[in-house]
Structure formats: structure tokens, C-alpha cells
Image (cartoon, rainbow, N blue to C red):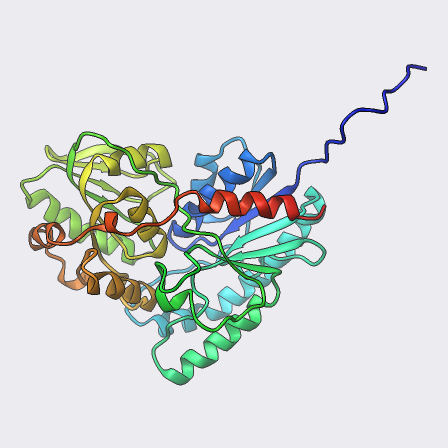
Length: 368
């Protein structure tokens, strides 16, 4: 029998991590991209799980990684009343949460998962592994004091299913998310990762006067696209509109000076935005984190009735970081001047590498 050396180093098996972002716009998936990349850099095995556009985005970004479909929440945003929108969809959402819990447990046992990192998917946890929730909303803002208290109470109870809550913000208030991410702690293990963005600052020659990046639930995304495209065609400046439609691959010109792309991968989008003088997008938190790293001036358009986006836009317009317009009153000609008068996101200083250090330490401490 061949002698087996006894002085070989002990190489532990890599940790197996399941990443599961919510499919509500693309922001939950995009801010998981730097988390996934950091885990891969540290030698972890990563598995992806989501649905719809978020699922397609992650597959496009990481085609080499195993990806699994989760039940869809089928979130739509047809009116400007957030409470009405969510109440109408609540039975479907609760059913999807329960269904994704069953599917998550099946994947954990099938794949030998050590930890789950869920971005706002409240059914993606499993006893016996380390469960993480990523969210910047520790405290929801809901119209009506009593209703806000009740919904936040339910949210904080849902947090207890998870071993840790990761907040993509600076620990020192107000950070970037203000009262959404700071204040009385709803969980004993709140950890601040630093901002999570797939973007990085690049010094490129300017190619576009205006870049429009769309995302968010339907039909609001389509309504905004139609209004913006009509005005972009009339403006005498070179622009590009990225539709945020991950299930198709189209690239064409709506006019000589208006370029249209259905979707761009992170690297291509980074280059386009770095080569743009101004940016127009929703005031979703993930978009704002991207703008911080890009250091660009921007116009933010909150989704009507989405109080989180309205709050974040108010925070940034009060400090003259960016310009803000309501969806029903969009005027891009006026917005160009408004954007140029702002201080810009370049004035906000955050450590772009903090999350890498955080994830490295967490992975080393993860049992398994």
C-alpha cells in the first residue's frame, strides 16, 4: 500500500452560500453582485436563487454559477397608493413567502448549504444554517402613524427568523439611508456592511449628455419609459436610455441622438454611466449607492406612492446633492439645468471596499 504523508496541510472544504434577492425592480439583485464577487474571491461556492428579471440579471452576470428559480411574488405597482398596492397583493405575497421557504429548505438539503444570504426575501431561511437578511429598511415609512407602527412590528418579528441583519450603509448615522437604516435596533445582530454597489468610478471621456436607467415594478416602469423617451427625442442632446428589460437583448437608435438598450451587464453599464455627464433614474436605494460610487450628478424620479423612495429623494434634495422631479411632472429640459446646479454625489464620501473586508471576516467565522 502506498504511504500517505501525514504532514499535508489541512484544507477545509469551501463554504457553500445561497444568495437569494427579491425580484422587485433590479436593485436587490444588483447590490448582491458585489457580495457574490467578494464571496467568490474568498473561495466560497455560491449558488443563486431568485425569479423574473432579478434571476435573469444574476444569470447574465454569473453564467458559471448554478441558479435556481424561486416562486414569484408577482409584484406590480399600478397606483400611487403603496398601502393599497401591497394590501391587494398580500395573499399572493404570503403564499409566495411560504412557497419559497419550502423551496429554500429543499435547496439547502440538496446542495449542502452552510449559509443563506437573502435580500428582502423573508421566506429564504432554513434552521440549521446561518441565515442573513440584507436590507436598508430597518424602519419602514408607511402613511399613518398607527399603521406604520403595526407594520414595523410585523417586520421586526420577521427579522427574528434570521441570525444577522446586514445593512448596506455606514454605521454612523445618518449614513446614506437616514432614519430607514438607523435608530432603535430591531434585532440583536444588526451589522453595517458599508454600501454595496456593482459600480466603480472611471475617468472616461464624456460621450453622452444624459443617461437614463430604468427599473422598478410594472406598470410604473413602462409609464416612466414612455414619458422620458418622448422628451429625449425632443431634446437637442445625445442620450442613452437603458430600459432594464433583462429578458431581451435589443440595442438600437430611436433617433439620431437617442440610443436605446434593453439591458447592459454591469461592466458595460459602468462604462456608459462613467461616460455620461448626467444620470436620470429612480430614487431606489441601490441606484443611489451606484451614484455615490460613480460620483455623478443626477435627477431622481421616485416611484409614485413608494414612500421609501420619496423619503430618500427628500434627504438628498435637502442637501442639494441631486435634483428631484415627480413622475407626473417630468420636464427634462428644466431638469438639465436643475442637475447642473446641484453639488452632485461626488461630495458624499464612503469607503467602497468596506464590504469586502466585512465579508472576508464573516466567511472566516462562518461555521461549517
